[in-house]
Image (spheres, one colour):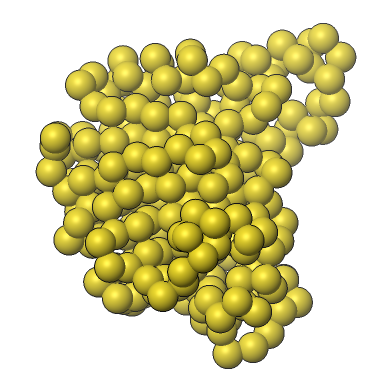
Length: 245
């Protein structure tokens, strides 16, 4: 299974889980043209798109996806907030598993300033168990046996506090801290979860001004030694495996 990063920032988020015969899209925050390019203008392998919440950098291009014939799976809160409608919008619920091709998907509620935001536990024979979670203050779940984690590491609390001390807008800081996950919170999540079967940890959605990619990578490597740690960047391709290399 190959992870293809099309976008991973406040400008737009979209990722592909591309297997031998089927592709699952994560997020609809970039132009569908970019997805077409990544798939060599062939959507025949696409089984659907999962969307975590209604904010523009994750759902802003959903109409384009729908017009391209792609089904989007999201919470009812996300769908209602978007103002879109039609048979290609599929409402899903926290705790209720469903399948798209050979992908088994379990939606789970998270903590963000949007109606019914979700993360997804995704299982597929080619990549094993993969957790996809972004735009949340924290992760309340303990999940055993994860092979891959695609997870938000938005900001460093020390950097964002220093910026406020230097004159940055405190209300912006407060909004970020109550709706996104810090590198410190992520590390606590990783420490509390079993990483024996973990192969890859991909850090998503880093803030342009409140993060340090090099330091984030080294910090997470110290928490989960011997595991592959990546910083998601546009155009990046990563092999996600059920078993170690």
